[in-house]
Structure formats: structure tokens, C-alpha cells
Length: 301
Image 1 (cartoon, helix red, strand yellow):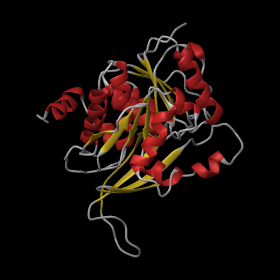
Image 2 (cartoon, one colour):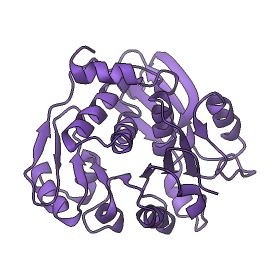
Image 3 (tube, helix red, strand yellow):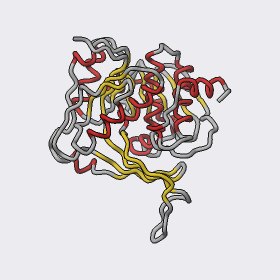
Image 4 (cartoon, helix red, strand yellow):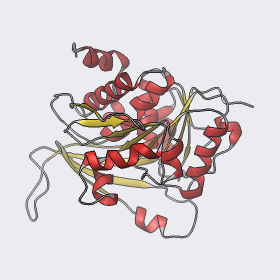
């Protein structure tokens, strides 16, 4: 039976302990005042689902196995939202969580992902064609090896355009993506010493899709194969927390695909989504709305 959701998301779904500090980032042996702390759904896919639901999109998501500590958080949070959790696999362990310390535009995530990935076991679900069929757009995190590739393969087979993130130029995920969003952290790790323009000149030649390079508060670059590099300055907003900014940008790209936006419109819409997101904390309790994003895009936000 085909899925009735508009968007299929596959990837990291977890619960995040987020701690916002009041007077700057942590310093050794110094006291820090906590301005707010929460335990809410997170992860690249979890956050994207939250944002897309706020934008009025129906979502079904799969990915990370959900343990006993995470399950009640997700079930309670999404019970009144347009996010289908029926594909998730529930386990008897505690589940995957992370902790993020935040102070304005600086944050430090902490978790056990290196331990999990080196465990030799699969702690994520396997995409199935019947779960993807019928959707109109998708978002795929690249972290789950063959299963991430399978999700992309099934999307291609069913003519479903997908957004991915931080995939290098030689990867199959990048080649077949409708949109690949590459962060400056990815460039620092995979293309050390190369300027963003040099990276774009390389990666845009290996896909027929749109490649976007984000640079935090700097301008975004975007281009297609054979085309000139386009630029978009970041929106000027007051930053409260950057947690979830990239995941919200991805959600904005998925929304743009779903609505058939042209490249310029899609990049600007995604940038506006992210700009709204960084003005608030915690993001899951106050995600961008369509009116807010459109207001910023039009200059009235």
C-alpha cells in the first residue's frame, strides 16, 4: 500500500538535551548560568520533520531505532502533528540521545556516535519501497551506509526527488540528489584548504541536481552542472541559538522541491527558514511557520 504522506524522511531521529547559557560559552573552572534547558526531539531528520510539519506538510519518517528513553518524548511531541511515526523500530535499550551546550551562535554537541558507529551493529531501520511510494519529495541523511543508499535508490526508482546533506562529489547520493546541501564543516573535513568556490566548481560537475554550500552567517553559494555560481547573502537576524539551523535549511529545501520552486526561490526560502529558526530557543517548541518564512522572504519579516 502506498504511503499517503507528502514527504518521506530517512536518517537521524533522537532526543536532544539542549542547554542554553545566559552569559557566553563555558569557560574552565568558571560558573555558567543556565537560561533554559529542554529534552525534545532532535537529529537531522527529527528536526526536519518538526519544521516541515510546522510549514503544513505531512511527513513519514524512518531511521534511528527508538529506545525506551526516547520513545515517550517522540510519541508525546508528535501526537498532534502531521508526522507519522509508524515506520520507526522501537527497542528495549535507552536509545540514542545527545546533549548540546549553546550560547548564541556558538554550540558544542556531545554524544556517543563514535561508539555507536564502531559497535558493528545496525541501530537504524531499513527503507522499504512501499514506505516511499506515493510521496512527492524526500530527505535522506547520508550516515547509515547501505541503507541511506537504498533510500536514494528507491527514490530514484519511483521518481521522487530527494534532498541530502554533506555528500562529497564522488558519492552516489550526491550524483542522484535533486539538492545536496554542503556545510562549511563538511568542506573543512573533506576538502581542507579549498575555498568554497573551488569546492563548488568540483561538486557541481558530478550531479544534474542543485548543489548549495552554506557558510554559517556568510553568503550561500549554489549552482548546477555547467552553470555559473550564484550567491545569496544570509538574512540579517538576531541569533538566539544556532541549534537546528542546518536541519531547518534542509527542511526548507524539501519544501521547495515539494512545491516545485525554481532554484533561486528554493535557496531563498530555505535560507529564510533557517534565519527564522536561529532567532528562537528551543526550536522544536517554536518552529518557523509558513507566514513567518514568507514574510522574511518578501522583506516584511
